[in-house]
Length: 482
Image (cartoon, rainbow, N blue to C red):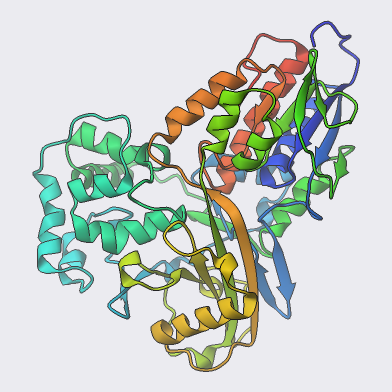
């Protein structure tokens, strides 16, 4: 591409109109404005709308999320994009007075003990008085303080690590529903290195997860106050759709092609061709890995095989609105998670209108139940009415709700969540090595180095920067999967 004139427009295609594809296109617009172009951008989306799994519905005072309901603020890419889009004043924090999580156990909801952080306890008195664990289970967790550190290892499953350091009850009653629920994953295969590498590092550095977390909390307490502006999770007054709309509006002259199914990506000399379209100078593929594998099938067999090897889980949400007086539970938290050992079809339930303001009109509450995932049956086997009945039955048992809901909405995510199995990072390394041979081609999305919205934005922006570098003919990294 370096043999073309500096002022000739480079044709760039972005395949996929979810948040990854949108963020990639937006970053290219920014780079062009900063002098990296000129570019002729085309974004191709197979569906009828942009945003992918992100969607929000505002109805009679309810804000109903069809996909992710928040941005993790401790990962900078999401908030940075919001700042550049002028959206910061639209962000809302969680209601910190409601920052409590419940665990469903033996048919009842038990508050997660104060100081229990994902995998391990950091305060012993709340743990000691909790009815969530047996006396032996509590003692087994405390053994983490005296157990020798394990041999250094590149990767390990979540289940293996937690059982080894903290015991079976910590895994089955907390780690599996909390962490496995985030990834809708099987803890026996979920890669710790790809999801929470800091815990592997804690063990090697401090010899104990609990001791490492104590030190971390002590350092945080002694550090000067940064006047943190945001809670751990943030959202928007009108829902996550605000982010999609703002990015879309900022795409400028980008040509968006909805309902356009790209069948394959081919080399065309030094350029790239999508089906029978005119050739492109560069392509960013921002689709799920199994779709990317199909698009690139004729390009590179090892690349295709590694992309196709990333498994996916399906899930669904059932959002129900109730009159507040019809819900006996105090709803004094963000929601509850359900351990797999309970044998229930529910993964979790978020008390959406308690987690964030502006989610339900006065006198009503909005509850969002999750079903499916790697440990449960595919919710695609049930129709919407059956899924609503399932959710209502579970909420009746766990929250005591007997009255019918004021409204209901079902959203489905078929093969939408990649499974970061043990060895995932080795797979991603191989994918990136193959891409390094494909100048002008990049991948982006949640299949590689993080599943959250900030992760998707970060991969997309790195892909865009690599492509801009390729189009300038520089010697920098010109291919990216993360």
